[in-house]
Length: 74
Image (tube, rainbow, N blue to C red):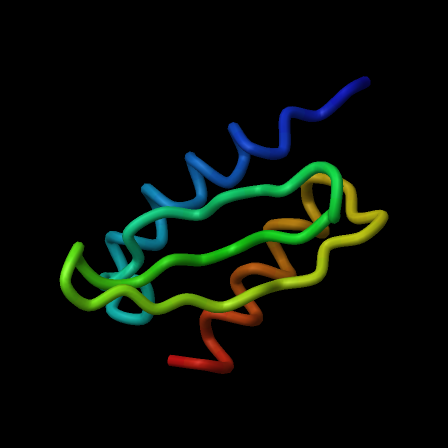
């Protein structure tokens, strides 16, 4: 089965925005070529972000890695 990792990131972003740790997340972008995820915070005037290496991750592992990164930096 081929997993749509950007779709997973989009849905995870929706869920994380409902939490205290993720309330400032603006979007989560998956880069297929580099196998990394960028988590963007803030509004248009206050942009910040973090990079999460998800090389070789399944969809479930991708979720775990992103959540771990958000919680560690929150």
